[in-house]
Image 1 (cartoon, rainbow, N blue to C red):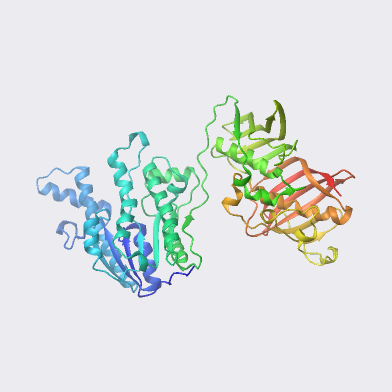
Image 2: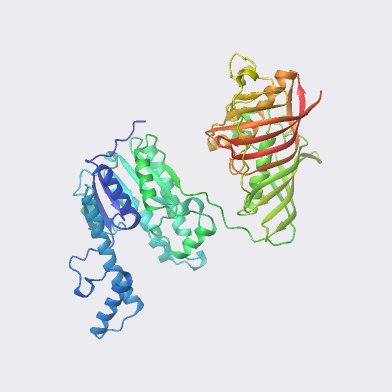
Amino acid sequence: MKLAKRINSSSVFLVSGGARGVTSECVITLAQQYQCKFILLGRSPIIKIEPEYVKNYFDEYGLKKSIMEYQLSQAQKPTPISVQKIFNQISASREIKNTLSRLRQAGGSAEYFNIDVTDYVSLQAKVTHFSAITGIIHGAGNLADKLIEKKTEQDFEIVYAAKVQGLENLLSCVNIAQLQHIVLFSSTSGFYGNIGQTDYAMANEILNKSAHLIQQKYPNCHVVAINWGPWESGMVTPELKKAFTERNIGIIPVEVGTQMLVKELNSSKATPQVLVTSPVFPPATEFNLELKTYRIRRQLILDENPFLQDHIIAGKPVLPATCAMSWIINTCENIYSGYRLFSCKNFKVLKGIIFDETFVDEYILDIQEKAKDNNIQEVEVFARISSEKSQKVRYHFSGEFKFLREIPSAPLYTLPEEQKDTIPPWKDNNFYQNWVGMLFHGVSFQGMNKFITFSQEKFTAECFWQKIEAKQQGQFPVQWFNPYALDVSTHPLGIWLQHFYQKSALPASFERYEQFAPIPCNEDFYVTTEIKSESDFSTVADFVIFNSQGKVSARLFEVTFIRWFT
């Protein structure tokens, strides 16, 4: 793919909603950086000569007071609606003038046109006079927040049209083939959803999908839908701020958000959709204290889970135990909105799921609530995966899982100094080719880099799991729990087993698992393994998984590995 041209002083951006709010701050920052030109579109008119009675008032209180006094002097009865209407007109006009002034001071140039982006006829009549447009920034948007049962068709049209019809109109008025940049201001509401914003979420998600389609059709254009979280300024009402606070969503400072836009447009790797927000956690579920049970049936389809081709034992794809855990964990986290896994105990591999003659069309996940508490915000369940064949029930995996609203702070673990003299002089560190007895894993599960220390009792290894595409993950997506990286964390033990005992083993059970943070992906992480016992038939070990700063992501205690071939 040929990269889009860099922004420079010759670049000309057509900008909807660009003279006010967040979008105006973004174009001002672009002007400071590149001294380019902007054609700004907005619904608010510029008041060239303000009425005398407002000229010396600039704060909201003083301006509204002056408007009321003027209405009284004209024998008019001031009402909140009439005062607010005039206030909005004056404030909008002043903001537009201020934007144009700041753009000139930044070294850029701009023209403003009072045009509603949903008005195609007016838009086309004005835009066709500009032949050198090289980019579009679509920042226009409206809100009409209400619960869905209270929304009207007019509410939907106001919100939907500004985003979707606005984009269609902008693209219809320019020569898309000559565009170098298309930036769509979307929202995390489209990505995550938000109460009262069904129409806004729908419109923004259409922008997200449009970015992908446009990028495919015009690969030489840098196309991106930026899913912004809430800004310090912008369409964030007090009600929305409260909702964001309840979900631990941080507010984006203006100077941070604008620099993120510049960085994105400077990136040599065009990504059609970018999420800019802090991690989003849904509101906590208010439990009905009656203990419940759930039964979920699922078909496992080999072709829809490409990663399974990287986990083949004795010639057959085998579902990793960590993926069985993720099946249970992800299901529970969907049931208990706002809660995440903290611990699992007494997890057992009873009968693995193998894609051979024992495979069945349907597998069953049973979840039985053991305890739940709204005050300490935790829930405990027993979960088991089973199947039926010829009227016979087979149990595959089971364990007890605890989910918390707030995960405890991660403990710290000291990365030991590298002790090269303790590490055997292997020819190279290509473990997945040279140690195939235990490390049979394909690329989806490869990540063992090197040993930091190595002894018969305890050792630390450096790992790196390269995140695989969502399509590769199939029915077992990485969320809070990462089944692929956790599997990688056990690989150093496989090398240890073959080095000292010339044997291989598979995990059969563990006493306890704790998770404080996601296991890192696309960056180095470390695993310290301590051997608790060793026999001819099994090995028992503890694991600590931590990042380069020593922050513990997860811990495994009393993991039993059973010998499976020599």
